Image 1 (cartoon, rainbow, N blue to C red):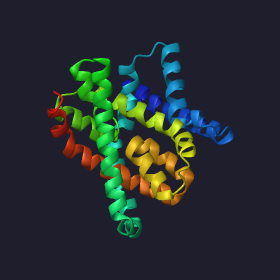
Image 2 (cartoon, helix red, strand yellow):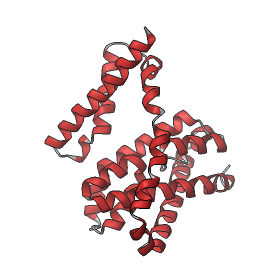
Image 3 (cartoon, helix red, strand yellow):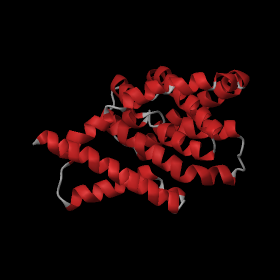
Image 4 (cartoon, helix red, strand yellow):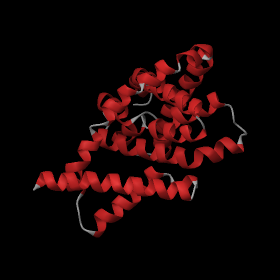
Length: 228
């Protein structure tokens, strides 16, 4: 019975996401990005039928398990776009490094400003990297992995929704800059958004997300020591 219910949850999640993708394609507003609207619809569905999160995750965990292979698969865009990476190596590395540092410090300073619990601070710090990496970082520095994943989703959805407006406001159009911005700030969700701008933007976003995950993994334990 549990297996049938789990399969139903996977099917439900897939159908809702595809449905929200169709809605986004018809009404192309940043606030309607599928990852955000799908999340809202699933929450409403679970609440309406009184289905607990634990029950939903009987199937949801199968989708969650795909995050790891998805991150590993990002090695292919790195190889495919190695020419652009070589040509713009220094600007990309320097920009992603700066973005990673800002992502870490912004989360930490926001936590200190709001005087939140230490566990929340440690969970919020790696918010700007992809979920599997953020959860591992949170574990290493003493945060709560599940909470870190929530913050990652918030950062990703926010970036996908408001990133285009920010880029337009600051008149940023260069494909390398667009890709770096989305990848460093909003990880996988941002990368999906970057692909809407163009294939090169998406590829650079993939590179940016991968590098930011590496930098954050190295920097996080050292940066946290200055604040805890």
